[in-house]
Amino acid sequence: CLPQTWENPNEEHPELKCFGDDDPIDVVEIGSKAIAMGSVTEVKPLGVIAMIDDGELDWKVIAIATDDELAKEYNDIDDVPDAVKDGIRE
Image 1 (tube, rainbow, N blue to C red):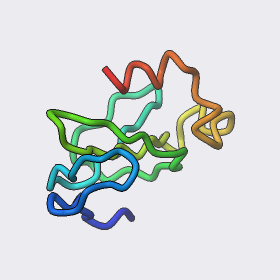
Image 2 (image 1 turned 60 degrees about the vertical axis):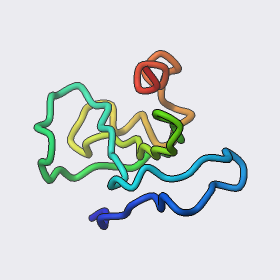
Image 3 (image 1 turned 30 degrees about the vertical axis):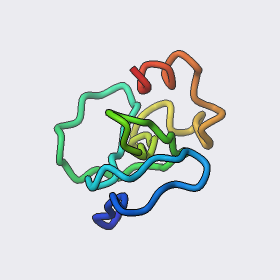
């Protein structure tokens, strides 16, 4: 379970030099099936990507559903093809 965690809009990230977006942290599931937004799904976290959206820091947890056929192959963010990671950044 991922607790509802917000990126603090009053605290500047020391390296990225921007403030949090005051939204819950997003989980981006990259498996082969469509999953409804807000659904509760067992996933394997692979890593995080820090994105800057309208000048605000927006962290994305990259994950794959544990029942997806690629879950056995993906164990770390480095296992995810660059094309998939680039698609998340767009």
